[in-house]
Image 1 (cartoon, rainbow, N blue to C red):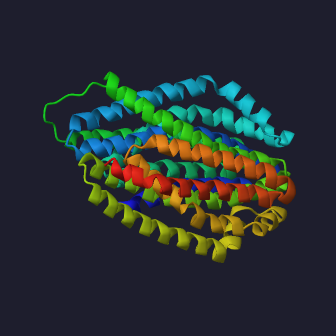
Image 2 (cartoon, rainbow, N blue to C red):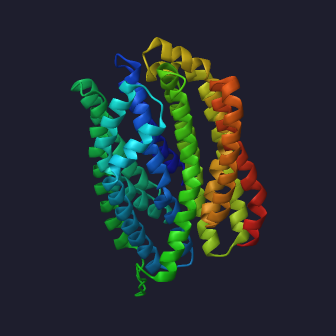
Image 3 (cartoon, helix red, strand yellow):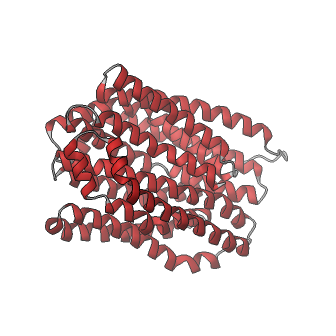
Length: 423
């Protein structure tokens, strides 16, 4: 199952790499900086409400393991209802969100101008994105990795093709990237709804029914998603602070860190494939109350995740300069990115434990522990950043990020015996 999920996940940073590449070959670095800031705002929102995927997979897998297919169906309805409500609210609040974000980021006037254009177009895709999250999480919970792969490939394939057409073909610049994303996200939602229709027809039906607004179950869903939102708020805040503090180092360093951030995104989405697989496979073990199967499958997931992390690091070391050259043609940005290449090459080995343990904890729906460990790691990140960046500059920025990822893995490992006792 992990193979298709990894392929699907890698298509997401591949999209980001294409966006970086098409804009990175324009004449000025502030175009790339604008996409970096605009994409950072959406990454913040998308990651923050990725709870709609993360909070759907585990409960779906547990319901499937328990043979409760009425609840399996209803979980999707609850998730889509929540996705529509959140997406609509964010569209209504787009102007204050943009104003607050640009106020917090100390970027140049050119970067702010084009980042604003990018945001005001792409924000209309939010309901489609969140709806797709709910669908993909539900399908993962059913141990179906092929249909999410299809949905993400359709979405990102359309996005990549239209980005190349609009920016290189039509010369629309930064707005062209945003328009491509808007069209692609609604195309992906349509594909996802077709997949749902197909799966619902094949699920067993024992005549039982489960209410969408069942108070106890809806409250449990909100509690799980609430913990995940707080946990994810810390994660995306780290990435947002990373890009915001990069902007303080100048347009060239901001652009270079955006290029290197693409490496980190490949790492994150690739390793998250194992976390998603763990949610589905281990979630079924939780539903069946089979602790030994949970332990056995967890060992297998960690073994493969470790091997992929090592391979990831080796590729970055060997091919990093060539990848950077593909992402930008601006000589000073290339030189700056190559100077700091070692950091994104080391982070897969540091972060693999946090990424994989996230899937384990989500499978067991022990989201409160996830939330608390991330809060502690976030505080450590802020402390290291405050102490190290004034002295070491960009190295202090990357070092604080490494502390955040490493400490998350350590803390989740320490709490694991408590999770095992509860199964």
